[in-house]
Figure 1 (cartoon, rainbow, N blue to C red):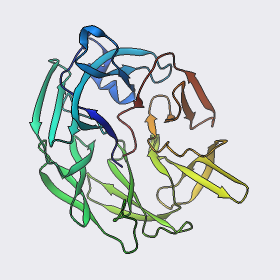
Figure 2 (cartoon, helix red, strand yellow):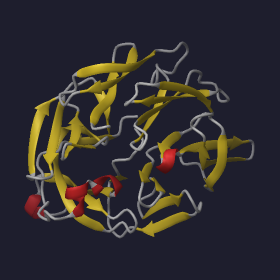
Figure 3 (tube, helix red, strand yellow):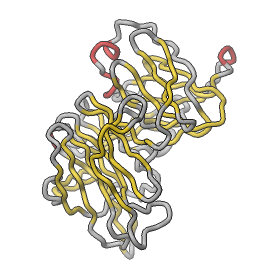
Figure 4 (cartoon, rainbow, N blue to C red):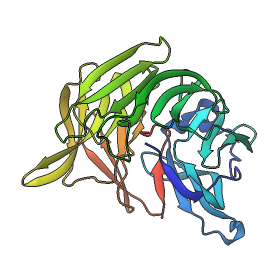
Length: 313
């Protein structure tokens, strides 16, 4: 669930001189593509990588957002937009805050045990890692726990890299829902659980679902999943839509011709109604969830990662 950008820490906020850009006024950043590039500018050699805002439809780079210096640490990809700031956690137990109005950057202490930052209903949420469990929590800006929404205890016979079975997290801003998929058994044909938490009403719902490689929430209460199909003669992935209230699979949205082994980080772009599937480095691949078409857009620049605010945790 943790999206890690190894060996990089954000140190300063650069290049946001276009103060009238819609992104800074109406928070359109959530529908932008975020592009991480190796820095080749010798005039700013202190910055190992830069991050840019790009058009999600064309891949065209629009604005430079910040720079990442050469420091031994980790910066996590679960960037969030909160109170006119971009928040990013780093592994040294700090939060880097980019203020989009003043173009300033500050660093504050942050709970080192909290990951997978998310914003819903104007509030911060995340997951807190304990010795033998994981808590889904509401937090303040220092990572202090305000309330525990749910706790996932270690499971018997679970693998060492996932003792609690907590697998993927997505969220629906329209419905104020945190959505968690969890494996209770690690057999290939086991039924998983989907937990729906309404952070406004405090309600919780539990649904049986099939085992999915990844999940992503879309528009109008719809939800999608990347599913692995393994038969004696073939192994491939497909993007499906399912009913989050019942767990019933509704349709195949798109069937890929191969197995997407490293494509768990799905990104949803609300205005396009498209899901970015991250694979390869020469093009950007998005699936239109209405038409079921795969849209391949050539990328004429190098990048180390493509992402967005509406990305699977």
